[in-house]
Length: 87
Image (cartoon, rainbow, N blue to C red; front, top):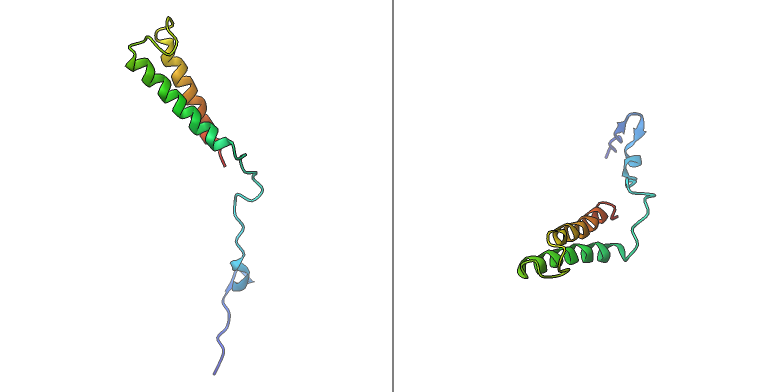
């Protein structure tokens, strides 16, 4: 029986196309503590805001009123920014 010819793409053999190189090659991975830290920061910020609203502004830091919202959102923003650099 006759053997069929191999197809060529741009002058190369079809067998050369089986090698796949990932685009992430050479990019270092994040340390193992990275993901737990940003998850923790997101949760701490959320709990901070929940405590502020449930206590009607008496806690977590009394006397600074709406700055508790800024602190809680700031903690959450740091956690969110860490998610952008996670690999």
